[in-house]
Image 1 (spheres, rainbow, N blue to C red):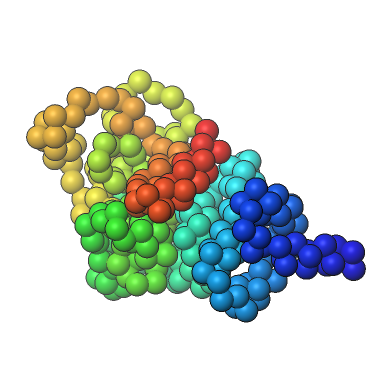
Image 2: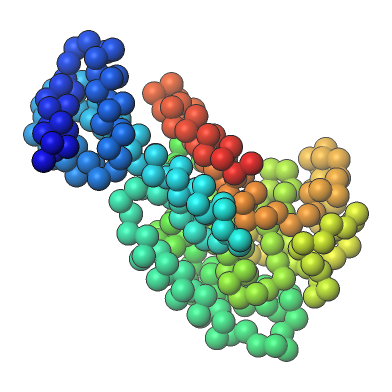
Amino acid sequence: MQKEAEINALFKLIDDPDEEVFNTIADRLLNYGSPIIPDLEHLWENTLDEATLERIEMMIYKLRLQDLKEAFIEWKSKPDPSLFEGALLVTKFQFPELAIDNLRHQMEKIRRNIWLELNNYLTPLEQANVIRNILFSYYQIKGVEVNYEKPEEFLISAPLQSKKGNAIANTLLYAELCQQLEIQAQFINIPKQCIIAFYTSDWDPEEIVPNPQEFIQFYVEGTTGNAFSQKDLDQYMIRSNIEPKNSYYKALSNIKIIKKHLLEFAKCFNSPTLQYKQKDLTDLANLLD
């Protein structure tokens, strides 16, 4: 009862014109954590003053961000952090009220449809063709150009919901499906590209080798699912003036993939009014160091 009385008293002071007073009030409210979000939302619905509305919105945002930071720390600390669960956390930054279970259900449907078409006699290239046909023909998922003014297209929810994602979102989906289906393929760190490498059966992701590209059979472009060779990639690097490095061919861990995802997503919030989101996404990425 005393706690509720204090919260209600603080709510009544949210519109205080003194910024210093408000900051003190906001800090105290943030200490109560996300359970007070429904009360803040109710207060927002019954507030007319624009400045006060903005204050309430920012407090709700900060409370959700606190929870998200804790979720990322917990995710990173797991023995084998799921790529999909990490991608869902990034999605929650932009869409905190999204029905995540619906995305999990859709992911499972796609995985099962691919699994039904696979067998032990398929070559890796045939496996890649099955994934491509299911994703881009059966489900008709489309790849779109990277546009930093459309942050929603960076998220794994984009291909799962709207059937339209950019290179980052579609490659995340592709990489996660390979992991769930235990296919020897992983996201690699080629500059300015989102590429999946298909490795030989004797490849060990935990083993540090001097020339990881020797274990790569071919590559897949995540936006379309099209396969290409080492020669094709070499030609791209020559055209783009990229000096080849062995590190480009090393499979990225799920933690590094999600960090890369967060930093790329942060570029969507470069306008002066949204740069606080860019900073917060960068801070989330730094938690994954």
